[in-house]
Amino acid sequence: MSLNYVTIGINNLARSRSYFDAVMPLIGGKVAMDYAPYAVCYQLREGRVWINLAHNGEAASVGNGSMVGLLCASEAEVAAAHAAALANGGSDEGAPGPRPNYGPDFYGAYVRDPDGNKMSFVYFRKAA
Image (cartoon, rainbow, N blue to C red):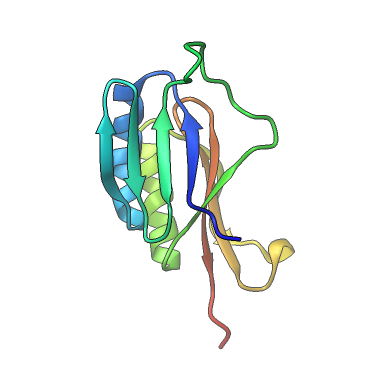
């Protein structure tokens, strides 16, 4: 199985665009489709991330235990994405660094977007 896309519920497209437009290019993403004022789709190296208002018209809410992991190409990319997230309305959930409890090659950082959605930026180190 492979993943085609994920959706992240947001409540304010302009605020979320500021955040995601700053972060996504740093991890190989670019705007693929713009359906303002409802949704934007970012094409990543593999797969897509949609940010969108809830289709039922109600407020988007954070899923307890839910997180989107975004694959990065290097430790530097993890750090850059984490810094951009914090500089654009995100909050810190874990600074960039190795996470040996997730495996010897796992390097990541964790943030929440302006709506509180948790995401990780992940890089798998190459064996020496």
